[in-house]
Amino acid sequence: MNIRIIVLFLLAGSGAFALHLPARSQSLSDQCRQTNRRIDVYSQPSVGPDSQIVATLEANVQLTLAGNGQQGWISVKNPVEGFVIARHLTKCTDTPASTTPPSQPQPNPVVPLTPALRNIQAGSCRLAIVDLAIRSRPNIETGATIGGLKKGATATLTGNTSSDPEGRFWLQISSPMQGWISGGRSGGSNVILCGNGG
Image (cartoon, helix red, strand yellow):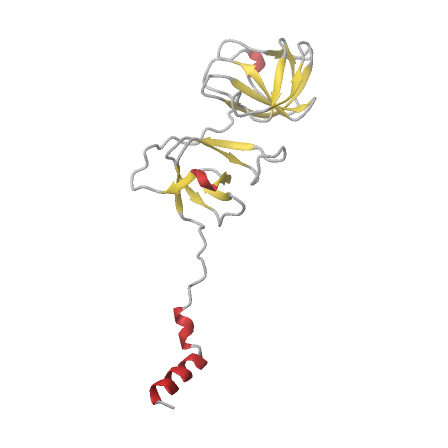
């Protein structure tokens, strides 16, 4: 047997060639990614009823990953913790086009609101003064109608609120079913305080 063949055989047997095998995929945790459109951050890797929107990020906002993706979703930890759809992210640029912080549910929005839309607390009650759709998300375009709240009916609030680009102020409710209703716009309201003031 040729000496060169013997040396190669011995190296292969010793595992020396393992150095040329591909390395295991590295964790994406702490890596930077940037949104390529306006996206929602969810509490769970799902758009199902058990997953709530915890924030909305504008396009070109940089965020920090919290782990590797799975089934099209990836976890993030900064500027907010939650899960986003991975295809809506791209590699970070040196200078982000937007430094807008995430829009999160705000208990006291900056626009002047009627008394029924102030001091929103979990368990409080509101009475509808118009027929309202109950939606899966706080957005007319992307939130599917999952029920309705008739004029004169009451709803129990979870304490979570949101607003959309059209200026609607949304209230998350836990009854008569879980979902979101439009509380109204600046200066107007679709709901009033229940009889006991809460």
